[in-house]
Length: 261
Image (cartoon, rainbow, N blue to C red; front, side, top):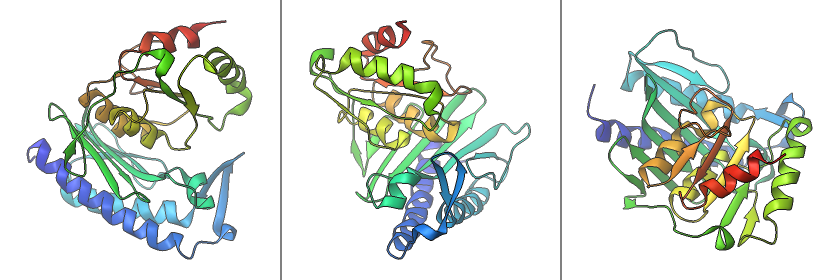
Protein backbone atom coordinates (compact mmCIF):
# COMPACT_ATOMS: atom_id res chain seq x y z
CA UNK A 1 0.00 0.00 0.00
CA UNK A 2 1.23 3.51 -0.84
CA UNK A 3 1.60 6.09 1.92
CA UNK A 4 -1.55 7.68 3.33
CA UNK A 5 -0.94 11.13 1.87
CA UNK A 6 -0.62 9.69 -1.63
CA UNK A 7 -3.74 7.57 -1.16
CA UNK A 8 -5.64 10.62 0.12
CA UNK A 9 -4.74 12.75 -2.89
CA UNK A 10 -5.81 9.97 -5.24
CA UNK A 11 -9.12 9.63 -3.37
CA UNK A 12 -9.64 13.38 -3.77
CA UNK A 13 -9.44 12.84 -7.53
CA UNK A 14 -12.01 10.04 -7.31
CA UNK A 15 -14.36 12.22 -5.26
CA UNK A 16 -14.01 15.14 -7.66
CA UNK A 17 -14.75 12.91 -10.66
CA UNK A 18 -17.90 11.61 -8.98
CA UNK A 19 -18.79 15.18 -8.08
CA UNK A 20 -18.46 16.25 -11.73
CA UNK A 21 -20.89 13.50 -12.70
CA UNK A 22 -23.35 14.61 -10.01
CA UNK A 23 -23.05 18.27 -11.05
CA UNK A 24 -23.70 17.40 -14.69
CA UNK A 25 -26.73 15.26 -13.84
CA UNK A 26 -28.19 17.97 -11.59
CA UNK A 27 -28.46 20.30 -14.59
CA UNK A 28 -31.10 18.04 -16.19
CA UNK A 29 -32.41 16.29 -13.08
CA UNK A 30 -36.14 15.56 -12.72
CA UNK A 31 -37.94 14.72 -9.47
CA UNK A 32 -39.77 11.95 -11.36
CA UNK A 33 -36.49 10.00 -11.19
CA UNK A 34 -36.49 9.90 -7.38
CA UNK A 35 -37.18 6.70 -5.44
CA UNK A 36 -38.34 6.56 -1.80
CA UNK A 37 -36.24 4.26 0.42
CA UNK A 38 -38.16 5.04 3.62
CA UNK A 39 -40.39 7.87 4.75
CA UNK A 40 -38.69 11.13 3.66
CA UNK A 41 -35.50 9.19 2.73
CA UNK A 42 -34.79 9.37 -0.98
CA UNK A 43 -32.45 7.91 -3.57
CA UNK A 44 -32.01 8.49 -7.31
CA UNK A 45 -30.11 7.01 -10.21
CA UNK A 46 -27.51 9.70 -9.51
CA UNK A 47 -26.68 8.23 -6.06
CA UNK A 48 -26.37 4.79 -7.62
CA UNK A 49 -24.35 5.96 -10.62
CA UNK A 50 -21.96 7.90 -8.40
CA UNK A 51 -21.46 4.89 -6.13
CA UNK A 52 -20.67 2.59 -9.05
CA UNK A 53 -18.07 5.07 -10.33
CA UNK A 54 -16.46 5.41 -6.91
CA UNK A 55 -16.36 1.67 -6.16
CA UNK A 56 -14.80 0.92 -9.56
CA UNK A 57 -12.08 3.55 -9.05
CA UNK A 58 -11.32 2.56 -5.44
CA UNK A 59 -11.03 -1.12 -6.39
CA UNK A 60 -8.25 -0.17 -8.80
CA UNK A 61 -6.61 1.99 -6.14
CA UNK A 62 -6.64 -0.64 -3.37
CA UNK A 63 -7.77 -4.05 -4.67
CA UNK A 64 -7.44 -5.76 -1.29
CA UNK A 65 -9.97 -3.48 0.47
CA UNK A 66 -13.62 -4.19 1.25
CA UNK A 67 -16.53 -1.74 1.13
CA UNK A 68 -19.32 -0.31 3.24
CA UNK A 69 -21.53 1.68 0.84
CA UNK A 70 -24.85 3.43 1.34
CA UNK A 71 -26.50 1.97 -1.74
CA UNK A 72 -25.05 -1.52 -1.22
CA UNK A 73 -23.22 -1.95 -4.52
CA UNK A 74 -20.21 -3.56 -2.80
CA UNK A 75 -19.52 -5.36 0.48
CA UNK A 76 -16.82 -6.60 2.84
CA UNK A 77 -15.90 -9.67 4.85
CA UNK A 78 -12.72 -9.66 6.93
CA UNK A 79 -10.48 -7.34 4.89
CA UNK A 80 -7.83 -5.35 6.76
CA UNK A 81 -8.85 -2.18 4.91
CA UNK A 82 -12.44 -1.08 4.28
CA UNK A 83 -13.70 1.85 2.22
CA UNK A 84 -16.79 3.61 3.63
CA UNK A 85 -18.62 5.45 0.86
CA UNK A 86 -21.54 7.85 0.66
CA UNK A 87 -21.90 8.59 -3.06
CA UNK A 88 -24.20 11.57 -2.48
CA UNK A 89 -24.61 12.89 1.04
CA UNK A 90 -27.48 15.33 1.18
CA UNK A 91 -29.72 13.67 -1.41
CA UNK A 92 -32.77 15.69 -0.32
CA UNK A 93 -30.74 18.88 -0.80
CA UNK A 94 -29.63 17.63 -4.23
CA UNK A 95 -33.20 16.87 -5.30
CA UNK A 96 -34.25 20.41 -4.42
CA UNK A 97 -31.14 22.09 -5.84
CA UNK A 98 -30.26 23.28 -2.34
CA UNK A 99 -26.60 23.33 -1.30
CA UNK A 100 -24.68 21.66 0.22
CA UNK A 101 -24.40 18.09 -1.00
CA UNK A 102 -21.27 16.02 -1.20
CA UNK A 103 -19.33 12.87 -1.95
CA UNK A 104 -17.86 11.24 1.18
CA UNK A 105 -15.13 8.57 1.16
CA UNK A 106 -13.24 7.15 4.15
CA UNK A 107 -10.66 4.39 4.44
CA UNK A 108 -10.58 2.41 7.66
CA UNK A 109 -7.98 0.00 8.99
CA UNK A 110 -9.49 -2.06 11.78
CA UNK A 111 -10.82 0.35 14.40
CA UNK A 112 -9.03 3.37 12.92
CA UNK A 113 -10.06 5.85 10.23
CA UNK A 114 -6.90 6.50 8.23
CA UNK A 115 -8.17 8.58 5.28
CA UNK A 116 -11.15 10.92 4.94
CA UNK A 117 -12.26 12.88 1.87
CA UNK A 118 -15.43 14.95 1.48
CA UNK A 119 -16.06 16.84 -1.75
CA UNK A 120 -18.71 19.58 -1.54
CA UNK A 121 -19.97 19.78 -5.09
CA UNK A 122 -21.69 23.16 -5.34
CA UNK A 123 -18.89 25.10 -3.68
CA UNK A 124 -16.14 23.00 -5.32
CA UNK A 125 -14.45 22.43 -1.96
CA UNK A 126 -12.53 19.22 -1.28
CA UNK A 127 -11.96 18.62 2.43
CA UNK A 128 -9.48 15.88 3.28
CA UNK A 129 -7.30 14.38 5.97
CA UNK A 130 -5.09 11.40 6.57
CA UNK A 131 -4.09 9.99 9.93
CA UNK A 132 -1.40 12.22 11.43
CA UNK A 133 -1.41 14.61 8.46
CA UNK A 134 -3.69 17.42 9.57
CA UNK A 135 -6.88 18.59 7.86
CA UNK A 136 -7.14 20.48 4.59
CA UNK A 137 -9.50 22.08 2.11
CA UNK A 138 -8.36 22.73 -1.47
CA UNK A 139 -4.72 22.67 -0.39
CA UNK A 140 -5.12 24.99 2.61
CA UNK A 141 -4.85 23.79 6.23
CA UNK A 142 -7.95 24.08 8.41
CA UNK A 143 -8.49 24.06 12.16
CA UNK A 144 -11.48 24.10 14.48
CA UNK A 145 -12.65 27.36 16.03
CA UNK A 146 -12.36 28.51 19.63
CA UNK A 147 -15.84 29.85 20.43
CA UNK A 148 -17.36 29.32 23.86
CA UNK A 149 -20.93 28.07 24.01
CA UNK A 150 -22.59 31.49 24.33
CA UNK A 151 -21.06 32.55 20.98
CA UNK A 152 -21.11 29.14 19.29
CA UNK A 153 -22.75 28.37 15.95
CA UNK A 154 -24.35 24.92 16.34
CA UNK A 155 -25.63 22.51 13.71
CA UNK A 156 -28.47 20.37 15.06
CA UNK A 157 -29.59 18.10 12.24
CA UNK A 158 -32.96 16.46 11.66
CA UNK A 159 -32.57 12.75 10.85
CA UNK A 160 -35.21 10.73 8.98
CA UNK A 161 -36.26 8.84 12.12
CA UNK A 162 -38.48 11.71 13.23
CA UNK A 163 -40.66 9.83 15.72
CA UNK A 164 -37.68 8.64 17.77
CA UNK A 165 -35.64 11.83 17.51
CA UNK A 166 -38.31 14.51 17.89
CA UNK A 167 -38.13 14.57 21.73
CA UNK A 168 -34.34 14.92 21.58
CA UNK A 169 -34.18 17.70 18.98
CA UNK A 170 -37.01 19.57 20.71
CA UNK A 171 -35.10 19.43 23.98
CA UNK A 172 -31.84 20.55 22.33
CA UNK A 173 -33.45 23.50 20.58
CA UNK A 174 -35.25 24.54 23.76
CA UNK A 175 -31.96 24.29 25.66
CA UNK A 176 -29.76 26.20 23.19
CA UNK A 177 -32.02 28.59 21.28
CA UNK A 178 -31.33 32.06 22.64
CA UNK A 179 -28.33 30.86 24.63
CA UNK A 180 -25.82 30.34 21.78
CA UNK A 181 -24.67 32.38 18.81
CA UNK A 182 -27.19 30.64 16.56
CA UNK A 183 -28.42 27.25 15.33
CA UNK A 184 -28.33 25.86 11.79
CA UNK A 185 -29.61 22.76 9.97
CA UNK A 186 -27.83 22.16 6.66
CA UNK A 187 -28.93 18.70 5.52
CA UNK A 188 -25.56 17.01 5.06
CA UNK A 189 -23.79 15.22 7.91
CA UNK A 190 -20.51 15.02 5.98
CA UNK A 191 -20.45 18.75 5.31
CA UNK A 192 -21.54 19.68 8.83
CA UNK A 193 -18.50 17.78 10.10
CA UNK A 194 -16.20 19.51 7.63
CA UNK A 195 -17.58 22.90 8.61
CA UNK A 196 -16.75 22.12 12.25
CA UNK A 197 -13.24 21.20 11.13
CA UNK A 198 -12.90 24.48 9.24
CA UNK A 199 -14.21 26.60 12.13
CA UNK A 200 -17.37 27.58 10.26
CA UNK A 201 -19.47 25.68 12.80
CA UNK A 202 -18.51 25.09 16.42
CA UNK A 203 -20.50 21.90 16.95
CA UNK A 204 -22.67 19.34 15.18
CA UNK A 205 -24.87 16.57 16.57
CA UNK A 206 -27.05 13.93 14.93
CA UNK A 207 -28.43 10.48 15.63
CA UNK A 208 -29.85 7.72 13.39
CA UNK A 209 -27.23 8.14 10.69
CA UNK A 210 -25.02 5.63 8.89
CA UNK A 211 -21.27 5.11 8.95
CA UNK A 212 -21.05 6.45 5.40
CA UNK A 213 -22.54 9.74 6.60
CA UNK A 214 -19.91 10.55 9.20
CA UNK A 215 -16.76 8.45 8.85
CA UNK A 216 -14.72 10.68 6.52
CA UNK A 217 -15.82 13.90 8.17
CA UNK A 218 -15.05 12.59 11.64
CA UNK A 219 -11.39 12.07 10.75
CA UNK A 220 -11.23 15.55 9.23
CA UNK A 221 -12.58 17.05 12.47
CA UNK A 222 -10.11 15.13 14.63
CA UNK A 223 -7.16 16.06 12.41
CA UNK A 224 -8.32 19.70 12.60
CA UNK A 225 -8.01 19.59 16.38
CA UNK A 226 -11.64 18.90 17.23
CA UNK A 227 -13.40 16.32 19.38
CA UNK A 228 -15.69 13.54 18.10
CA UNK A 229 -17.73 11.12 20.23
CA UNK A 230 -21.05 9.33 20.06
CA UNK A 231 -24.08 10.44 22.11
CA UNK A 232 -22.84 8.34 25.03
CA UNK A 233 -19.54 10.23 25.06
CA UNK A 234 -17.42 7.33 23.76
CA UNK A 235 -14.61 8.23 21.38
CA UNK A 236 -15.07 4.89 19.63
CA UNK A 237 -18.10 5.88 17.57
CA UNK A 238 -17.36 3.99 14.35
CA UNK A 239 -20.01 1.28 14.66
CA UNK A 240 -22.82 3.41 16.07
CA UNK A 241 -25.52 5.68 14.70
CA UNK A 242 -24.77 8.92 16.55
CA UNK A 243 -22.08 11.60 16.35
CA UNK A 244 -21.19 14.73 18.27
CA UNK A 245 -18.37 16.76 16.72
CA UNK A 246 -17.16 20.01 18.25
CA UNK A 247 -14.30 22.45 18.54
CA UNK A 248 -13.56 20.76 21.88
CA UNK A 249 -14.44 23.87 23.88
CA UNK A 250 -18.21 23.28 23.75
CA UNK A 251 -18.23 19.48 23.76
CA UNK A 252 -19.28 19.07 27.36
CA UNK A 253 -22.03 21.66 26.95
CA UNK A 254 -23.51 19.62 24.09
CA UNK A 255 -23.06 16.32 25.92
CA UNK A 256 -24.82 17.68 29.00
CA UNK A 257 -27.78 18.89 26.98
CA UNK A 258 -28.13 15.57 25.17
CA UNK A 259 -28.06 13.66 28.47
CA UNK A 260 -30.80 15.82 30.05
CA UNK A 261 -34.12 14.10 30.65
